[in-house]
Length: 165
Image (cartoon, rainbow, N blue to C red; front, top):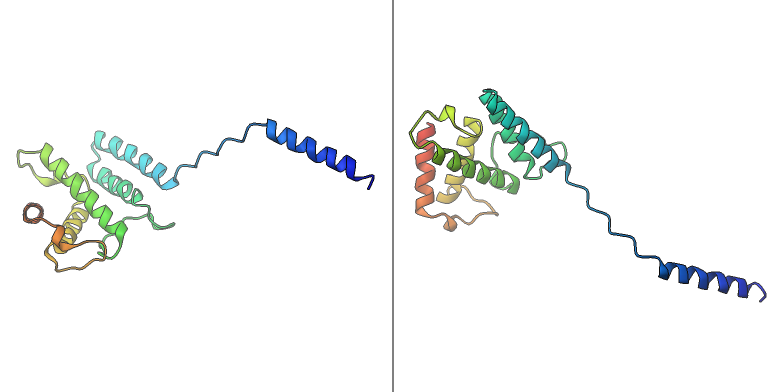
């Protein structure tokens, strides 16, 4: 019983000190390593474009876009064949289509696609084919409803694939 008073005093002191101390700040979440790598690759791609290493810049830019889709650990290389059942592949294909449209709008003079394509031609063609097939309903995906594709978008995809050969 005589030990109860010191224990109680220590418990009260601990409680009082704990109450007086401000709460610890929430730790900042660490940035995703894939996004950091994507940013680094994007900078390298821009440097390669400026130095005239177009082929290398396209490959690096494609890898940067792939890293932004949050691939699984060890899956660092972008796909060469797009799978309609993989959400990451669809996000990458949409990214490729968007960048293709941006680049095409900047180059309205009809110059050769090899001089302005943002990614390797094979990847652009594969991505556009996947999107066209999804829009036409020849390929099914649990992530896409073919009824969402407008005739205008399908026509644009066909035109783009025709330009790329």
